Image 1 (spheres, helix red, strand yellow):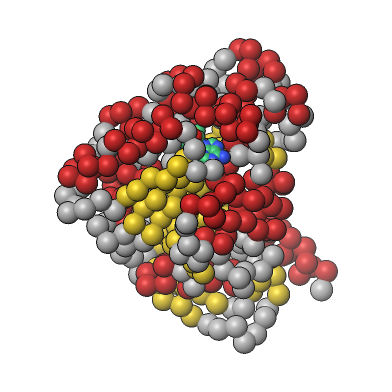
Image 2 (tube, rainbow, N blue to C red; image 1 turned 120 degrees about the vertical axis):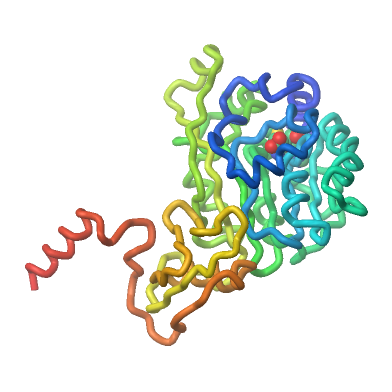
Length: 352
Ligand SMILES: C[S@@+](CC[C@H](N)C(=O)[O-])C[C@H]1O[C@@H](n2cnc3c(N)ncnc32)[C@H](O)[C@@H]1O
């Protein structure tokens, strides 16, 4: 473990000095940042921005006054974005193990406090290992949102990190994070290559292994928010990883004990009332749930809970209860009005 930590610390503390040194497109996977995020980025110190090594946008909406923990905060870009969106009454804590990264994030605390117009800073950075979060004095059941950007792939004991993330979240809190995933398990000789590992490639999780780990940690029904292909710009790395496909995926994992394995139909519906900054006209929960303002939409039990048992409650009206189960919810993950589903329905009808 010591060697792995040292190798990753060396990569992020000494080998790389700016985003452009990465040998993949990881830090450029987000093509269009929403305008309120662009505005917030404009207030972040150039040095912090120049050492951004993430692979997605890990800042959810509706963050006012939230307590946020960033796992592997690096030079602090996402912490300083979150610090603006939670406001002066919110709190942001970044954890990282690499001195050089922490030095940058810490050195700019006063700059950002002043830039955001806060009387005192709402942001702090802790040195520590993600595998040992309990050693840092972070309380259980405390954080509303835990973010992480291109970090879990670098951790050996990923299950341990997901388990303690679940413990540190409040009930109704969520982990909202981007990471690199691969289409098949990667053999040990490639995992042991410090450049492939440091570049967030060979430590990345085979997608089904991640889903099993997330569920084991307590996170049922993980939701994909966004995906983007990771491309490799270095020929020798490409050759070593021939046959592997890498994706950056942003997931949201809710800590809601009652979530079920599958999407079940209880005849419930919701209506987005509007009011979330950046999503005034429609609220995007994940890649297959977009709620237009003022429109009543049928939802499965899990989606109902993700909106009702969390900080999103105040932005929705809710219809129905849990008194009757109608079977599998057909609308989750696919469009029930798609031609495929229509032909299925008509075939079924024809049989009756
Ligand atoms: C790819 S960089 C991403 C940094 C930051 N999230 C960003 O978006 O710029 C990975 C970061 O995770 C940190 N890291 C990796 N493994 C860690 C571990 N086991 N414990 C704490 N920090 C870790 C590294 O020090 C590095 O700063």
